[in-house]
Image (cartoon, rainbow, N blue to C red):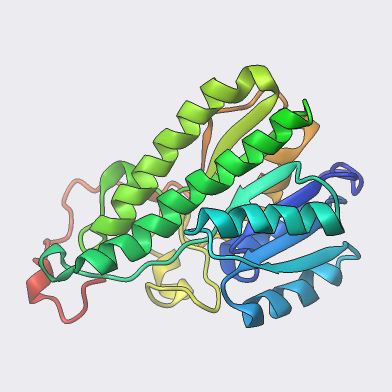
Length: 267
């Protein structure tokens, strides 16, 4: 999509970059010349992701990190700076999700999702900003959004609330940091099938979207590479929706709504 040296010299830290959407974005940046560091709590995920990133010819390293812990976030940035150089691109993709009715959702279950998707995003953004300010250098942040942040989604109160807050955080930081040359955007994907997908078969779900298909990981990589590139230098505060119009689908006569407690499966 872009010249292969578009991101040459850029050091990208991709949380949750060992698999799924995070890996798709990491690959997009790697193919445009960026040097990549991927983080996860799971070293096995990192090793599988590294193999694919290095196959593009990019330099890449793994960093084990739990983004819920600010001390680990700071240590991860230290590791990347020591081995590769200062982080100039931050992609917040660490996340998790599971279906649950609110009355069955324990405080720990609520925190498990919110602490990763919201707290982790904030901790990484803050660490990135402080370090870029010390260097008097600009940079780019891309946060991971979800289209149900605007609509809500039954059985997913924890993730809906966290993603809505993360999109608002994106807008706030964009305005707060623009004068420092730091751009903050969000990529808001629809359904992109991968090994750890929740929600069913991609061939079936694809037929439910106006585009009549699911997304392909390379499309997320292209979007991430563009938003990190000089071609997007005046774009900040954007929630980049890339879901085949799924969030906007409307029917004159919609399907009957089945209460969650009457469903065999919540999703």
